[in-house]
Image 1 (cartoon, protein in one colour):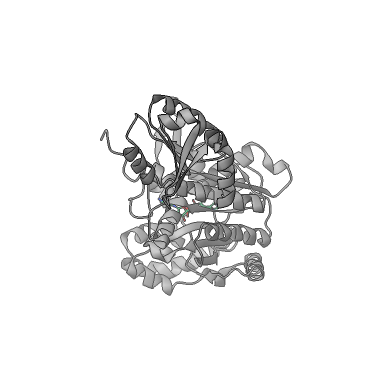
Image 2 (cartoon, protein in one colour; image 1 turned 90 degrees about the vertical axis):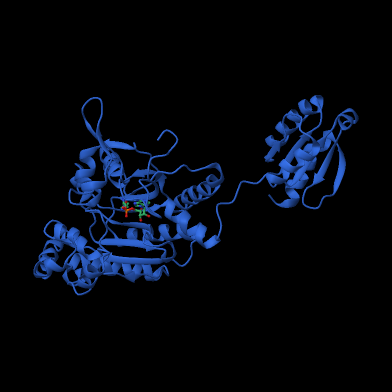
Length: 424
Ligand code: HAM
């Protein structure tokens, strides 16, 4: 146990970190474009926040939360998602009193005690956004566009956007009754989980993955036919905005999402190629959540993308693991004095933005060149005792093998020209 990480949790090792940075930078870049600011909320919240926010009858609250009593006897939970904490912060800091909309994004780890498989971990990372204070479907379209711009920016083009409306507190109870009337006589044909969920949360039956349940869901009444006038108008408005933005979508009447807070718009972005856990991004509108969590009646909408699933999709498309960070210059010193001098030169080169590494412990020229090669360095700077005495350094092009001597004092201007020449 001592040398084993917890099940379903992963180390992000240095060779993978550059891909994570790329994705996080893309998230920040796209958010800046859309005028979203970052919020960082605690990883722990009071358990009640998720019970009330995510919903008592969801899988997350029923069986997936990491909950424990702290030393003061309070029940605390590792956040299973980011929306409840963002809403709590919005209410606690009274953002509803300022100008609306309030547009936030977050990046960070989430925790769910699920059965681990490809694309499903117990600790995973989300990039999420939330918009508070505007009910206009134009906001739904902006949030969806932001999500798609993000996945496309990191290199995932052509993903499927699925869309549905899950109604509101007016029309959903009516639909719920219709569903119950449809499912009750079929109870015996349902899987055990669905039998269990039937009376408490019948909408969830629509996205059960078991074949028999799927077949029954195909013939179930559709929520689209039960929407109230306002929900229908909102939905049609959103379609018009998406059409105008050139965003293709598929209406999926069985898209219900696994969290209870959604009203009206629900959407998911799906990558087929990564197996059963293909939903890389999911979200929707939650017009009742702020009030449910103790704030005024303020509408909201957002999404979260699973970073591990995006990485899985990217690796599949690129057909390889994450790329390693590059090295521009590898410094090779031969002798103690030369080694001391190299320390100074490399520090000055790094100050100019040069990615510089070096050999240590007085290894042979051959061994150090091998190390430079292993790191994929572009240039070697070789400083032997003789060069040091003459005030020169050997610059060796590690791609073409050519080498030349340079006065050591010109190293910095050499780098500036080289960097300029390579367009870095
Ligand atoms: P969610 O659908 O539960 O929604 O999660 C969003 C995304 O997080 C999923 O589409 C998936 O990519 C990733 N994800 C979820 N669970 C796991 C897991 N166990 N392992 C790996 N990835 C996972 C939410 O969390 C909502 N808070 C989204 C939202 C924001 N809705 C409105 N605002």
